[in-house]
Length: 257
Length: 261
Picture 1 (cartoon, each protein chain N blue to C red):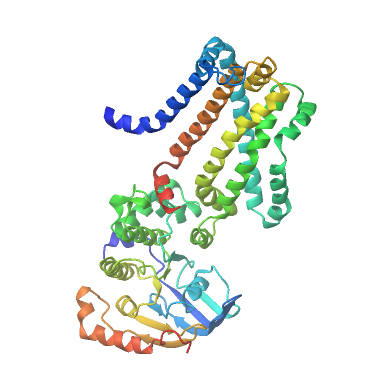
Picture 2: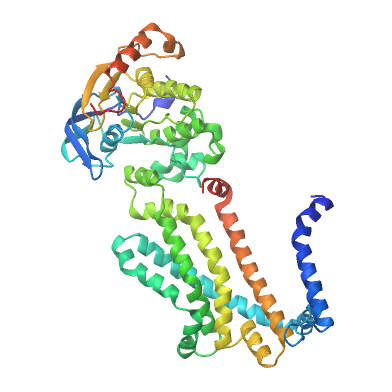
């Protein structure tokens, strides 16, 4: 791409950002806004640089908790969805509770997790897993249920076993939906990890919490900035894996949907 | 006919005996009304009827995908085991598999090794002139090529009964005509029994040797007649007087559109 082409792509979204940052900087410098409420962008950058080691360690801790939690919810959620899809009775019996489970606000059960798992990473992982499991169950189940009827007929015609139908047809057919569930879940896993850290300690969550009590708004902003980046990194990783494994047919899939 | 291609095709055709078969569905009510006919091994029969008559339902019964409410539908291979191939209205290929891996599917499900399945599938792809596209994915193919892949897939198990459900209806006319000829060739080379569902009189007359006409829903058997054209068919036949006469005769036998007869 030419330089001009690149400019045309990056300039429109970059311009408002620069304008906002400039306006924020100005607002604090001329004391329209007190910096203990809203730090100047330069102060946030300063805070990012000063505490870079601590922030990086915290970010790694949060990211690893979110990843472990996401892996657990992916494994558990996929297994649960497969189990529910294989029996109408099981689906009617258990799916309502999966939906109910999703409506429980994580922030209200986080204290309970501390009681069960104690302070530290296990609570954080559990929180990340609980928040991210429902989208995985829901979209995997939807994917497994939407197999093209003619292909199911084809498998029936050749007297395929239930296992063959599941592995060779239903799961590959559901993959695009599985990935869209995973994409939502990966963003939520970071949210769950940080909520878990507010109460269970560790990671970016406790940096935000500690900075709040110390009135270090710049540090709060720095940690918030990094945690949003973590979400973006995770979603990006899922997109990458999705493109890899859907490979040559995902474009046709997109066209038909 | 190429002797190498026909190798291993010992079972020539299956017979079908349809004895007063009825089937109804919740919502639509009676779809098939006491249908009876007999098809001999190696026959090429078109099942002709207006859209929405019970043709496809009858074909699904023959495929074993559905059971009649009453009456009997029995199929038997003249020698060996009954094996069926089915070609759907759409190509119904798996988008994540290459043409070759789509074609090997029936063999894989039957427990064949991957190498054996691939060599048999390649043979069938060559038969439908698609061998050089074996590594492509379905979305890279035209509609006619997809349908040929679907036919190759149905042939891999060496069926003695080939069932086709309006396979060419969605294709443009030149492609449809060329596939009709190819199917006819395949049948002449392999000699399995073919049951071909269509709503097009000209298609039925061109591909089949015998036509069974069904009425509007609930479908009853209106006519069961030989086409009586030469076994060898080519593009010139479409303009021949004998062909035009047959089309006119079977069109007259078709139920009028709209009002159930």
